Image (cartoon, rainbow over all chains, first blue to last red; front, side, top):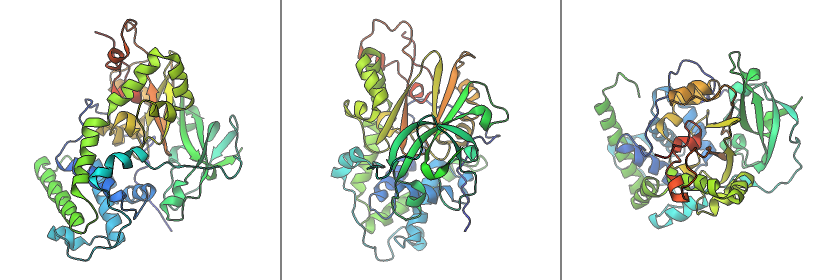
Length: 218
Length: 201
């Protein structure tokens, strides 16, 4: 099984300067707010979780050529097509041509404030002791990962220090694969930039939040 | 979006596609179109960086609140009425003369929605996501910010469901201001770490 993410950008060179943007400039075309709202509303039907959505987006073959909300729309369509909730000829026609499938719930306007306020907490009751303690040195997993993961390439195989233990959290890798929540301990692991980059600037430290299976003892 | 595309035809095409998608999904009964309007209105008028500015201003006038925010950001922020989607697990990090914090999501666009709203385009784009973890001083220079060489920079890559809020340093000359006036000095960028709080006029 092979898996290619196009979203793991940390440390890549050659993307050019950052273009700042004034506060309050949220959208750049009339369809963008609709794309945002469609994605959030369709998330509520319960056919997939956020980790599955991230996986659907980062594996789009044309990820690099698409704008942000184009990625969201492509990812949404891909998930709908995969589950038979939508078929390509319906987009062409601009109308439903096939029967709808049952969905768990439909987000109503009146429920929007409550649903947003509730969110989707990822922390779960601790069921095992944490393997690592604050101050401990660990190494980030170095191997290839044949599925969605949240361990960035730039820390793989690198030594870091456990800075904080953040409780047990839904494990993104398993969750994206549809294997359930499989909560694991989540750690904030801090890396010295001289261990990450050949051209490291002094006095720079970078941290990631890493689940226990991403780490091994040193 | 590729530069060689004609901008208007590209936008027109996406407008049609998204409209078609919305129509089909509504006909199938998967969405309630007024809910889309409610979602858009929420992020255009109610949930944005002014929320975070209130949190930061409170830390500048109330040392007890500041400590609470550093110890349990989710609870402290909830006490001001903010929380929920994409801010379920908050962590606040404070800038000091010795250390400057910068927040990024190299893998996608994770961002603390309840306190900062929707992320700006640059936060979601390749230049920022690629360089923030490797050349943060270069990124800060793109924003016109230069820090002393002696200041340590700490970059937080939001790789899980923790969301980060930077507490910028209170600007000099703001001593006599009340909390509301202080909040106007707190910019969105200062709470991401790509800016500093504004100096009072």
